[in-house]
Length: 119
Image (tube, rainbow, N blue to C red; front, top):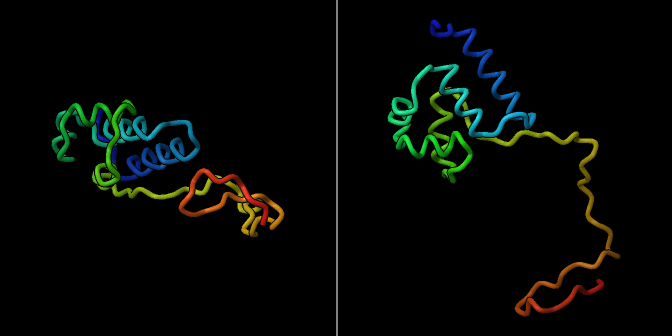
């Protein structure tokens, strides 16, 4: 299989991003697809590019690892991507109003054994 051209890479990356944003793919699966479909590199080569061990990359790709945000950023940067928030909730369903004052709220302070107090 020949390496994808620039336009094909963009389409592959967009498909992977949509799959992750929609919840069809985990972060690890998305990273694995990026590695294989965009670069075609094996784990050892790609791990070395990202200054990771092969074991660490394997754990990330199988969603077993606990990488730092910096590690994920370093991997995504290789594809021109950045880690960020994706809005998946329609804006019309989000309420920015303060909760009503008749709701019991936990009391804050030095004694955490206190119960809720009506305000």
